[in-house]
Image (cartoon, rainbow, N blue to C red; front, top):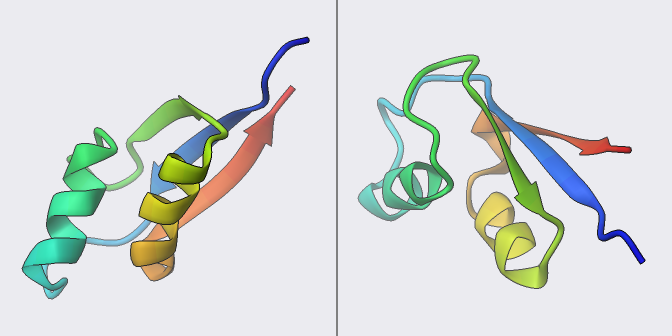
Length: 62
């Protein structure tokens, strides 16, 4: 069974985020605006996305 993947895009600047939120976004592998990364859909990644949802855009990959 193939696991679902998530495409995560940084849509806004990291400037103004709390240090914890900034560290979480960077831990996802995002550095620049409009940069995209792909991660497995796991509870850990979902929790990281939930920490800074206002600067991230998440879509499912087939």
